[in-house]
Amino acid sequence: MMALKTTGLFVMTACAEIIGCFLPYLWLKHGKSAWLLLPAALSLAAFAWLLTLHPTGSAGRIYAAYGGVYVATSLLWLWLVERQTPDRWDLIGVGITLVGMSIIAFMPRSGSPG
Image 1 (cartoon, one colour):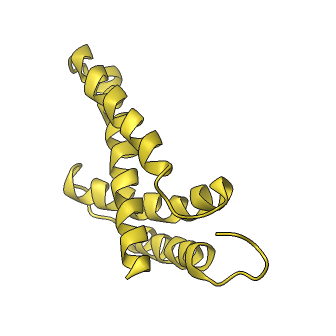
Image 2 (tube, rainbow, N blue to C red):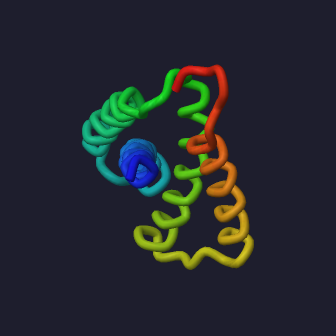
C-alpha cells in the first residue's frame, strides 16, 4: 500500500512539473497567451511543495526515484496530450527507468534513515 501511495504522489508531482513547463513552452514556441505563465508558476510551486511530501530521509534519493516516474508520466503526456504514440524504444526505456525507480525507492536499506 505504501508503494502505491508513493507512486501516486510521484505521478502528481510529475504532472505538476510537466504542466509548469509545458505552458511556457506553448507561449514561447506556439504563440499562445503570456497569461499561461501564471498557471505555470502556480504549477511549479505545487511541484516544489509536492516534492517535500515524499517519505524519505534523503532528498537526493527522492529526486532520483522521482526521475523514473517523471519519464513515464512524460510519455503518457506525449500520448494523451500531444497525441503522439510512444514507440517501442520509448516503452523499453521507460520500463528500464521504472525498474531503476523501484529499486531506489522501495528496496530495504540497512543502517540508513528513510
